Image 1: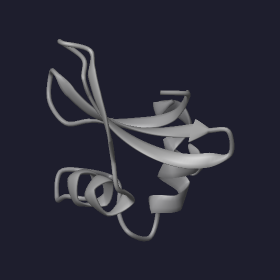
Image 2: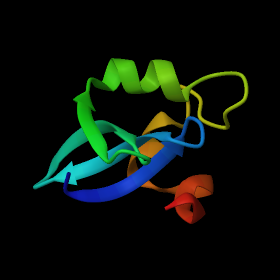
Image 3: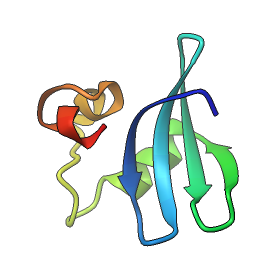
Image 4: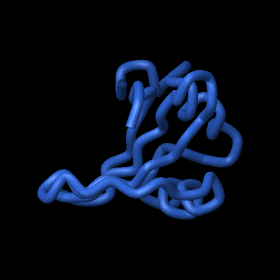
Length: 75
């Protein structure tokens, strides 16, 4: 996994990371307890990150992925 742009914690052990891999946006699900990482699709990342308990919406998805606006401090 290259540079982490932003992340969304799912629970104590799992998070979805938005990464920059030499200019290519990559989504990775990470088990922080075991260190296991797996690349996932953007569609899967949206399905996980956009939910009623999240501040991430379809309207601010790009801001989240680029760590802009309200997501600047999440980085």
